[in-house]
Length: 293
Image (cartoon, rainbow, N blue to C red; front, side, top):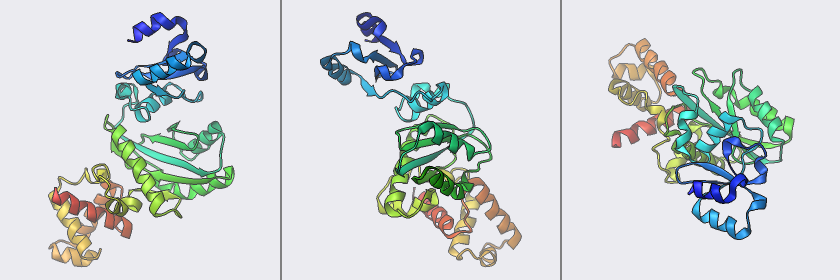
């Protein structure tokens, strides 16, 4: 089909990787994920409507995105899994979502400001003029320290900003579905806790139950430990002893220091601080849900 279009539109049709003036084209993708553009001046309204029924329409990507950013955009936003092999390979990937709820900002300036929050390079793409996504692929993350930095962004740009810090996920093609799920979690967080500025899985986990949300991608943090039956049993007893280390150690017939070591290990592996109420509630509910399945 694409070859037939090329023979008809000739130089007016161009592939995404070849184009410089993106806004001069109407963009579409084939069922196999091939992205192509046709010059707007070469299209009649009827032709545009016909192409929109045969192919998936796409808006032109922002000119400030480089090839790697464009590949991430096609993978995450446009759902083109064929470009996964073009993405940087790593063990883990985390998405951090920025939503400008009120106000507006120049995209390039905002991207520069977000990058300045990190001591290492991150990839940043935009879904809309109000929504930006950070793709973080570092082993040592600073995501948990972002809370106090969001206020700086809000004051510098005179905007109202909301942020969702996603979970560290294994790097696989499954990231597209994790991305879609976390966007829903972000929306649920804003709906139930509109006064909050920064959200993570611990903030939204109970509300996912309330809203009847599919929990499949909410429990990624449990993957590193869910096959360790001793760890799971230890943590469940710890929670049911009201986070009392001494009492839990006694019930488990374990030295207090050994239990403390396991607690620290769980925090390290899951990235969730179970010494805090929200973290403990999230992991406890996840363990109960895991036991049911």
